[in-house]
Length: 347
Image 1 (cartoon, rainbow, N blue to C red):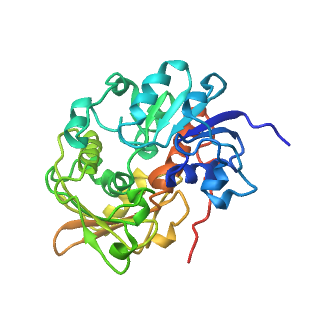
Image 2: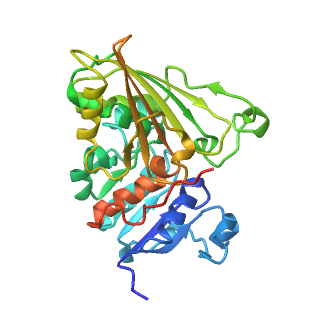
């Protein structure tokens, strides 16, 4: 058997993201999972927490304090907001590449982070090195990065929906509206009153109206493309499904536009982006389930002179673990789609 070239550790095993990282990496041709950590389940097997890995990945869970970073090429931090920053602070000067799946380094400054996350940031220096890990926008910078801030799931779908239009400069910086819906796994593995079965099943609700923390993440990345400050309306909703995000974005466009021009704009922007599929009809979440694809349907409404863009992703893959592996491939100089060619599962 061919020896695998790179070694990695997953810090944080109990959540959905840690499980999805393991599912993708266990079959990655160039990556060996050396260790997986859990502070609350030390001594148990990874497959004791996630039974689907029984006989496939039975590593004993260890504390993060036991991880030998000197023997690793890359570390994934599958930890909550406010926790990851302490591990970045501990390991950033060790030479290991770090991919942080929390929100601790996604924003432009610690001040913006503290304003939206309502937490003190304990490692401001990390913002100087962190690269926002959306490969469709920042591929070149990701390739040379030592710290990548993996995007949020809602921002991934929302930014990809609107990026070509904002790069064109032909949009109102205050005119975008994003209506987004997520499956319950987007709330994480820890149960709450909101995610209780009886409150989710056969139900549908909006939340975080006007102040959801992902709003600023979307605004900052679209501002980067437009080269001026962007302000938009973002409203998330909770779907009674296990995984998937569907985002519908609305924005007025300046100047002459039609469906042919809109299609061409999106085709040019996403040319040679292997995980963006442009569709000729509105996609559904099951059409990307279990995969790293983002399916995008741009529609020109000539009546209202607005672009309406529908994007679907799997929130645990393209919105989290799959995107993290994509970033890892770029950071290690591998072919970017290595290990990520899973065909979506439907039904």
